[in-house]
Amino acid sequence: MSVLVFIDHADGHVKKSSLEALTYGAKVAAQLGTSAEGLLLGTVTEDLAALGKYGVTKIHQAANEALNNLDTQVYAAAIAEAVTASGATVIIFSHTPTGKAVAARVSAKLKAGLVTGACALPDTSNGFVVKKGVFSGKAFANVSINTAVKIISLNPNSYMTVAGEGTAAVAPLAISAGAAKVKVTAVNKVSGDVPLTEADIVVSGGRGLKGPENWGILLDLAKVLGAATACSRPVGDAHWRPHHEHVGQTGVQVAPNLYIAVGISGAIQHLAGVNRSKIIVVINKDPEAPFFKAADYGIVGDAFEVLPKLTEAIKKMKASA
Amino acid sequence: MKILVCVSKTPDTTSKVAFTDGNTKFDEAGVQWIINPYDEWYSLVRAIELKEKDASVVIHLVTVGGADTEPIIRKALALGGDEAIRVNSDSTDSYYIAAQIAEIAKQGGYDLIFTGKETLDYNGSSIGGMVAELTDAPYISLATKFDLEGTTATVTREIEGGEEVAEVALPAVVSCQKGMAEQRIPNMRGIMAARTKPLKVTEPVAADALTAIVNFELPPAKAGVKLVDAENVEELVRLLHEEAKAI
Image 1 (cartoon, chains in turn cyan, green):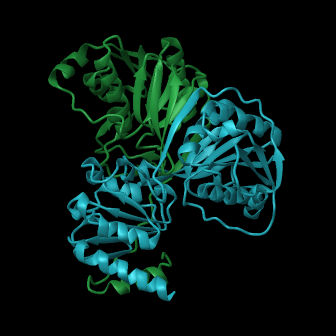
Image 2 (cartoon, rainbow over the protein chains, first blue to last red):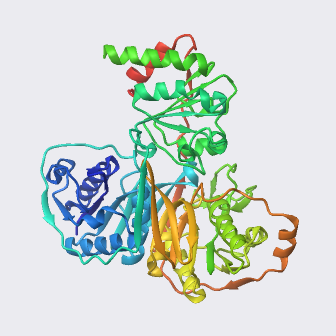
Image 3 (tube, chains in turn blue, red):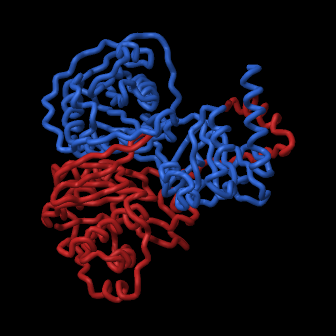
């Protein structure tokens, strides 16, 4: 019995969401009176033993370069072998593109119950009950997993990373990986940008900005905050911004520490995608904009005047901090 | 070429969410039901586009649900599916539902299975991966673009901070999201034709439910917005820094 945390990586680095998953997995293990271990498929440049500081005692690594590309069949088979080797009874994924693709497959392979999009530690006082977001951010469900092996995929930004002391033992894992059927032919990353779902701060613009040519003031604000940029659905539909920036019920759902909405009225579908944000700031000309009801802080004012001033004020604050 | 498109019924995106029976059931009073947008706008419409390019493409729809899902299946048929199968079950367990779809998939011998990236109600993102595993097929998730050349598919999928292009030989399972296709509205001819298209109802095969919903909760209400004067943005910065500790 142990907890196994799937560690995702890109460009040689372990992803931030996986550090959250490691911290979460260690906490679940403590709750169950067992230990947590990590599983990494592929190769990274950083020191895996150092991941022990997140509370895991051991990292299993299948250091096979072919595993740096995702093929869900190959991954699921490898993870199933690692589960057998480690005797894990709880498997933790991040609810990210990779986690979403792989966790379901592993669930079906092992016939192990899966809760995706978990946002809190499981309640193990009576069974094994995991809280997750449902109705696209409008509600939560408590879901009980009724199988011996349990799988959780953890929403990014819903469990804070805690680094302590400790090093993990790194153990090579030999897996009998079959050939990948999915061949990756190109990877296009928007370089330098903070991935939306991983961002601590998101600055988002709506139709109130009037046109794509006006996005500069929003990008300036995002830059001083080290924030990712997002947009409302009408903005994505009008191709003012790339559609992967569309946040809302039918777009990306985010849960940053800080969400700043500029010129977005706050339709129910948009709120569904952002209401897990810890702090919401709304800047809108219209004092009746429904978004103010869901906000923590607000400014009723013209974005074209407020944003440049806000950017300057933050710059000043950062300079003096 | 046979394509199986998985469709699900979800509450309209403008629906207010409430629960009954001690927060154990979704309150359906006054709720408008729609085809899950990811199933409709992206996977079904893309399948229809493939059929428009190649008349030999056959599109079957599958849904796992009660008789109350039939209006949305008819709408999907009006958009352009050839025939539909409804597996008669109200289960909300992803594995149970995937097992039903996998059974239909095995019987039908499909070259391609499309799902939406998730449903708007339970947000599982699980059916595609599970069906792929249960049918031993490769799976590409979160697809934003899909093209077919013979029996090789070229798929663009979302990854963190960008996208990836991958090739896969059919049969395969693909989950679809925004970018795949544009929303369409069924025309009168489609609506008339849908009335007589076959809608087969089958009983579920034996499968285990691995999870169960205990209850639901609504998010805590916000305490109320603190408004800051537009002339005093420094105050907002101070609040975000000192009070909210967000910057």
